[in-house]
Amino acid sequence: MTNLRYIPGVVSLEFKSDACVGCGLCTQVCPRGVFVLENGKASVKDIDACSECAACVTNCVRGAIRLRPARGTTASVIHDWLRRAGLRKAGSWQDQLHSK
Amino acid sequence: MDVNEKQNGLDEEYREPDSLVEGAYCLIDARASIWGEEPGQGPHSRPSFGPGHRPGFKICHFVREFVSTPVGDVPRIKTYWTARDYACTALARLGLVRNSYKVVPGLYCAGFPDKHAPVLVVANHKLMFDLLRRELAGIDAWILVIDTEGVDVWRASWRKFFSTKELVRVVRASRLRELVSHRQIIVPQSAATGVGARKVKGECGFDVVFGPMRFSDLQAYFENGMEATPQMRAATFTLSERAMHVPVHLHLLTKQFILSALLLLVLSGIGPDILSFARSWSRFQSAFAALFVGTLSGGVLLPLLLPIVPGVRFAVKGICVGLPLAFLLLLLGGAGLTPFESVALVALTLSASSYSAMEFAKLTPFASKTGIDRETRCALPWQIAGFGAFAVLWCMARFGA
Image (tube, rainbow over all chains, first blue to last red; front, side):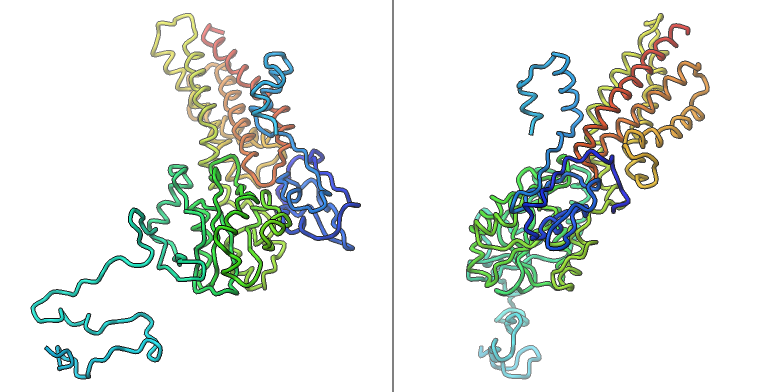
């Protein structure tokens, strides 16, 4: 399935190799084959394949993986534009609705 | 009358079969084959209720029988689909049954599991449950159904929102520790976004093993000694999977489609001769046809043809699919249109197609949310501009431009 690719260079995945203990859970739960286990530690093999599903974040015991994806909805983009234009206040109920 | 006398052709003396020695799979009372215990009576009526029947409750059609276990009666389920399951699956995929399409959370079993049998965890959405049990023919396993409230394949994505908390609750409530001697539960890989393996172990003592991504790989997974190959772990997006997403995709576009259609109605009516309803209506029909074709190309064609459509961004893919369709539309129905109107319709078709295609990205298993956000910020202004260009040209054409 790696033949289906999306925009490269945008994924917000951060992996701290020092914190990794090599349990391999990230390689098991990742549906896109982002991680690979080598020399007793995980490493990011293919970051642009990441779909930001956060399965690795949930399962990493040491918290070595961080993900800060955008909201990803058209409504949140429009709301952001309206907020910048001053037509919606920051911290309004739409912000709460659209924030993580 | 002495029942040991020869009756109705039975030559041997009747005796009660010994269930242990004779291995009575199900106890057949020989007298039941004789019409009535006394001549002249009809068939002997049997009680039609048994264990598992409780006042006010009905037994689900997929339950075969109830099994007595150390933790209580557990329903043994059928591992095949009946016509009813096929029909309801079709309805569920089309989104016609949603909130009620659930299974009660708790413990079930398939086959004849014992305390060493594996425990499979599944969401309580009935379609997921059916997809699992269909793969369990010949397998002895316990099935733990957990309440994944709000999980509906018709919500934003296909992820099954298991939560660690709910899984732990059901493990405790079903008294799994007393039922099985091992301490392992198999959770579908797609639940990994919500289920943290180490956290579950800490809270209820069970090791979470992530099974394959698709239930159809379960048999191979077990045969492989519960080792998942990389193919089993990878998310796929085959033609049939893409086709299954089309009804959801179209449903999510409904609001925008209706609003756009209303806007077209208004725009088609604007002109020097506002009293000419017939003219306005025929213009609306042309505009609506363009909107429809654009939505169809981005909503149906693009998902089906996804791997072969050029472009990385979905908005671009939408243009690629929409362009030939727009020209086809003009070829077939553009006889009486002025050049301005033709250009306007192409702009409308392309922006509708691009927008519909962009929305489909959210339903794919490979598009990152950050990428979708970037693409939307980039493409949406163009799509709005395209619609604006249509509006301007459409109205200008009416005024004799």
